[in-house]
Length: 366
Image (tube, rainbow, N blue to C red; front, side):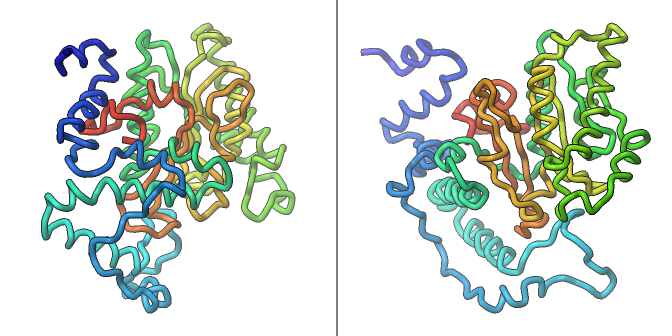
């Protein structure tokens, strides 16, 4: 009979951690990442609604009726006027109360919290977020979500992962100069001279501003406005063509390069035509597109199933999408999500999180 060591060394390295977990679980060992008692996270996410059992709260549920009415009673307005949720966000009273209850429960007995409750409730939170953001293909979308602490940590995983996969140091990462500042620094840090900034503010932003506002929808959905989308496409193409014309790259060498887009830009609040740009980048240059949607959750009518591409030939959509829960969604800080339906990208660029811990190699959702 083969020993556990023999079993492990008979399979690829990338699969050994997950296999070891399954072998140990048959001997009363680990059942899920870092837990002896919690069900496997990947299995919990894949269960149908019929087979899935919602975990009970381990403490008394609060009476939130008053908190919904006085939803920001904790906000200090004595010196500052709170204008919008885009900069730093603001948690609802009900969210703060529930977060406080969880912290008290955790500190009252950490072993019970981490080993019995945490993973089951994280899986439930992920399922709920998918249900909230998805109109179709919920089963598929539940295999496409990874909970993260915030979009910045997720973007580090994406951009850093793309750099790690760039063994020949020939793949580029493109970003607009009106994009989020920390993303620019990540590109420069991880990719060095292969980080390419797309000039937009000086020459193309005035063109965007000259488009009559009454011709754009009230929510600024530039994807459905050809004139706005053409401005972004022109800026993107100008940067790519400049590289090719200077002999620094060929069209074929850009395959697998990364294009970073902000769904809503931080400083200028522009709604970027993400579908149009992603479709063009894939069809013309075979690039991977990632969207920083930090400001989008609840400020836009998101349908993740309609946004993501799963990598099938001819399918339109975004390869990777990230969004924060602490901004317009008004959740306490520390909750965000990364979505990706493309299994090849899950196993390459997204194989490793920004911070490696127990869940690495146990599957995309872990």
